[in-house]
Image 1 (cartoon, each protein chain N blue to C red):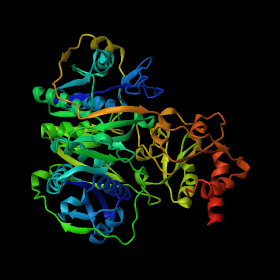
Image 2: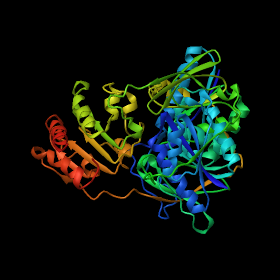
Image 3: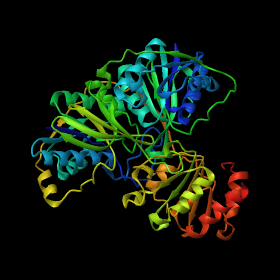
Image 4: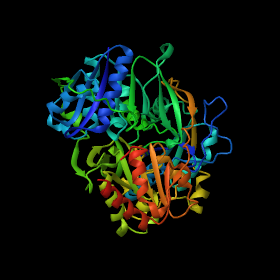
Length: 246
Length: 325
């Protein structure tokens, strides 16, 4: 079975967010980039399923410029077999989905996995767009994924519960916990990753449909009003009469 | 030309987030000089759909096909696309929910529309452009996004838009069929498992949340959180370390890689306030932090704080709510 795992290159979760002086772009200076944490569930689960089947391949796909390669190599070190990088800065979700769909069409993958969303743009869009572009089902967000032959059983999170869904390959799933325990690379993985194939392809020419006009930081809080612990009940009065929230 | 809003229903009721979506849609319609139609999904009653008039909706389309009671991505997408064609909708508005994001992303390709999710404000339409404000970087930033093209889809973040209530206004409910076939139900659920909801309030829909961290010392102490939550009508939540060690289920985990919430009131008990947790809660309107460590970073993001032991403070708060009545 052929798995395609789409990964995004995002600022580390502890990053303090700042922007370029014109507020049009994220300021990358001095920022550590990581594999999007949601995508790690997709990657590890694909590797686990391949191992359980005893055959098949896991291909990692990233839409990004050359600076994303360290994280692509990390995905190879975790256990993917090969990688494809579409050589373009991700312009918007639709642009990225077009690139993924184009690679997927050519490669004939059975299962296309990705994280629920990226922790930078938080679009939660690419999974559905790829499914629609390829005309195949999407299950999002998936908390569990098992395969039996060509049939997958997934748990799809809905507000307040979950649905048990069965779909046949090919399909797209966007992954989140508690699907698996994301793996970290071991020394052997890091050594072998260096020689695994990483193919660079040029993007299709599709135009994005959205443009970020400006970024801003959320409004700052006024400062905390402290209430002495021995007088804790006073807080409830403030929440009712001053903040008017209870 | 019209605005089409997607209204999610459950157990006959329109979800709170969908009342917000309907209100958003009717205000966009007003801005564009047109009317707002709703298409309802899930289990609904005609009486409750007619009440969407209070949120400014003039007409509601409803397909009573029984298999649409549960979420099916394929069928919902086809239903809404058919409604959008019939109504010549130029703007679609849906909730930024798991259902809304799943369906909205497919619809954006099918209808060749631009899509913005996680939207927190009404659009600005100066000079022919159409710009919405959305949350980005897991709540650490906001982005003004220009939506291109003739058709737009907007997924509205929960609790960011005030629902309208114009008493007495009713919407006309029309039956609607998208002529769905078995092929549209390939991802229909074999089974639906709902969570056991202690207080009956769902975290993603809640406007008040009481949340516990490692400072609660163990799952056996969670009754302190639950008592306060029950007293003020709040949902319960937890930090990542708590769900990682299985003190509480994963669906209660609030933070960057869990659920993002934006309630009117968020009470954090024994949570230090790691940046990943703050990312999931910092759009809450009022934040209360209870922690015995006065240096806990969470106090910097709080509106009210108590430096004290949660085991001492929480019962006092619950008692104070009961006394106020």
